[in-house]
Amino acid sequence: MNVLRKILVDKDVSCKSVWFMRQAGRYLPEFREIRLKNRDFIKLCLNSELSAEITLQPIKRFDLDAAIIFSDILLVPHILGQNVDFKTEGGPKLKNFRFEKLKDNKPKDFLNKMKPVYDAIKITREKLDNTKSLIGFVGAPWTLLIYMLNLSKDKSPRIESLLSSETMDDVLDILHEYLCLHIKNQINAGAEIIQIFDSWAGLLSESDLVKFCYEPNLKLVEYCKKMRTPVICFPKGIKEKYSDFNKFVKPDALNLDYDLDPRWCKDNLKNVTLQGGLHPKTLLETESIMLEAAAKYVKIFQDIPYIFNLGHGLLPETDPVRLDKLIKFYRQHS
Ligand code: 1CP
Image: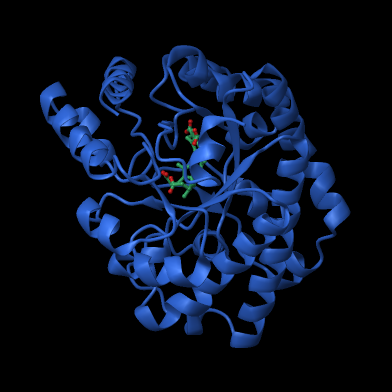
């Protein structure tokens, strides 16, 4: 069994492990080279050979314990009929939401269109050393909805004003169905761990957290458990509600965001593996500031099951040499 699974499943404190969100991406010159020749981001995600190659780029460069498949959470709404445009300034833009169109989807068509992702997972798994994990992922329904309804610029979106509660329930159910299908096929292709990204959970008011964040995450976590696959949740931005989330959803692991105090996390998040937390901006600071910040996380979490990672994805400005120093520091001091 590989090291990540030992920490996630056996809660083995003696195991040390490190990988990074967005480790396959824009900060790597070898990624930018491929990207320049492949202007259509969605097409690139659906090119199995290139997706596998990009997934393995950080593994070739650094001493990491896991690869995360090069894909995107927005591929699901794209394939469900809401074309995504990544070219626009100010984040990805989706075609207007139409409930009738969403409802018309068929699982068989979804799987046919997603097949290149599953092929990329197969190719990657064959090329990846057995000691390393391959992570598949999905966006949580709420975070997908934010993009589908074009609300990512909205600080406190009023959900009631957008869809009737009946339609909303149907949309959540449809998303759940396709996310399960996507999880299942990633696992069958060779993904051994699933991470659920709820990047916009922090936009929800306290009273909406249960319905739009905890419940949809719980349903996906239960599905992963049924598939006997460890699952990591990332309800970014919900502050101290991480504790309620943990009790409600009971994932194998929680990815901490950079807003959380790591000491508070250790005291309040129990019976769960913790992952990440370090602010990605610390990698842009001087080396000593970065290492001091990293040392804090290593020290606080040394005696509980912990996977070293960040409090959000690596920034495009990150120097790969700097990342290598961080990984070496972690290997020496954990
Ligand atoms: O322009 C480019 O070259 C594309 C940049 C890029 C990359 C490298 C995007 C566009 N997506 C990705 C890959 C990606 N996205 C991965 C796989 C690679 C890896 O992690 O190493 C994963 C797991 C994601 C997940 C993702 N996409 C999330 C959840 C995590 C998070 O960052 O909060 C979200 C919200 C997205 C949406 C998205 N995709 C891309 C952009 C520019 C955005 C908008 C949000 C953002 O800028 O992060």
